[in-house]
Length: 316
Image 1 (cartoon, rainbow, N blue to C red):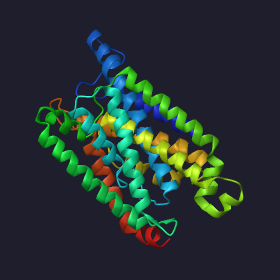
Image 2 (tube, one colour; image 1 turned 135 degrees about the vertical axis):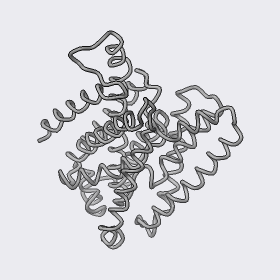
Image 3 (tube, one colour; image 1 turned 180 degrees about the vertical axis):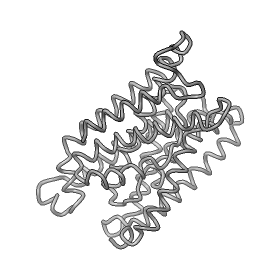
Image 4 (cartoon, rainbow, N blue to C red; image 1 turned 90 degrees about the vertical axis):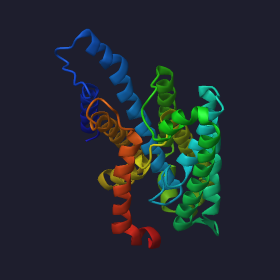
């Protein structure tokens, strides 16, 4: 099953490189079409896959560590707080590496505040966590709005960036994301058994010698690092981390040894498909920011979860 899905994913990725305002026939390409395929389409598809995998994996980690099925980078305020740092760095004209660093710092600070506000007698309250995430989104959005108002010279780039999109793809950015994703996947795979125990019962995990606080903090930081780097490179792309872990658990179970792989694969698949649709949905060659597409899909999925599983969320 795993290799069949990987093969199907690779086939869809190759097909996505041929789809766009100008469809390319791989068996009859001109030199210009070949350049478009290798220099524009292929790097963009690869970048969308890696960013989608990072967001899908981070959502799976958040839902595990926070024990909230509605947790993802968007609902917990991680994306907006990371975006706050990135927007300030862009507005101040900082170098590219400073954008990612500041996004990580503000993202970790914002998510830590949400995490601490949601603790009730040592346990995470899912309702409080979502409300704290909403408050964090409001505060971050207010500061971002101030930055857009005050730094008028950077307004256009900030607004376009906040919509979320796979733009300004470079080999350096792609390499950074790949290295980070592989490193986090390796760490989570080695600790998958501990994560399975942690997801069931904290007391059992402690009795088995697992340092619950250190493990949770480490994977918490790893997820925020994934989100902050993804946000700093692609803007705010919401709800990928909400949709993907639910689909992964429904189809392949909750074993983290498999869940981390399938969450990454399905996240890559979702964002790649959304970006492909965004390239062709508007006639005439105009592109729709991919963050709009994922927001439509994620909003509908969010309503579905609230309608059909709300009692399990709040009382389960």
